[in-house]
Length: 419
Image (tube, rainbow, N blue to C red; front, side, top):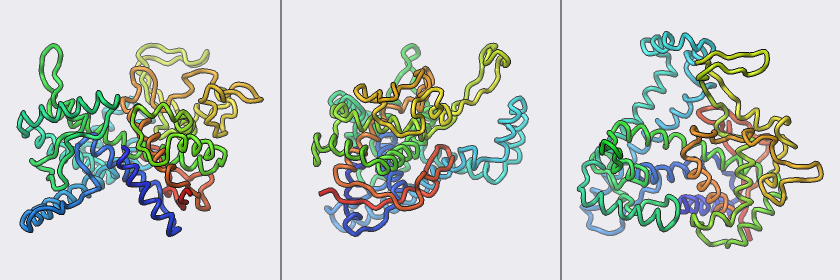
């Protein structure tokens, strides 16, 4: 996380010197893909470099391997973006509204969609198949590594996890020229754990399909959603000079040139409050879907039978003035104990369940901690070097619903170097 955020901060610092406009959401998406690529796959998806050492023949081999990996990288990124674009309601298959409007007809609609997919459904299926194919290639490569190499990598991962208190960059990162099919680099923290996990009772390992399913879920969930959260945070910060001043004070107290370790995160309560308030007003996931297990009396007039699909709009109830004082205002201080009230009274919600950008209870997003860490680290590393000026036409920020709620035309800013 530190490395990817620092690389982006350096690019933005350079852009600030020239005064050029930057589309920041795209840059943040590349950064989050770097992070999840290392964590989920053990593969550097963007920072591919050739070694300066070795003879000419070795460098030619590296170039050929790099070109192969770059083709796979481009294919994977294109497929992931297609999954995001086609995974939301607004840009989905024409079959999806039928399922939502007539849930009892879902089996029939699914059969029709399987037999006669429309263009959007076919594109989505092709993209998902591509992500699965590349994931299987990586898993097969990891399975084929010598047992001694796996054990060494496990020890490295355990050392990182115990030393930092959270997931860190994989110790056995692949060489830049590592191929994809059959020559995969060392797996990142998550697949490393899954590849060696065994059922406590049966002692069976996860199948390749099970590992791939978990990897793909993590990949899709941690890519654009996290980038959107960072982009929207910066958008709100740039609109509120008093918030930016408070954040810069917190960053400077920590140090302008320091990396952020997991043990340092508790030193950034205000950055964390900015994230919480951003996720309240602009949650990347806008809808929570549930199915009733028993008869449910929703209101005195409305009684729901078992197996009734329910859709709760997170975006709506996190802005509802019945739950939230000053509901439409961006107030990070509502999440700080010393600033949780003002002259109008408490800024806290009337019920804790009114805030659930990651879900609630047993269905809480398993990547919540990972995402929170990444956003806070990114904000600190970026604001150590720069501040950001919004370009005209972005107040309020135009958004669209894909798999997540994201900036519709990106986030156009001019970075300004800090003195």
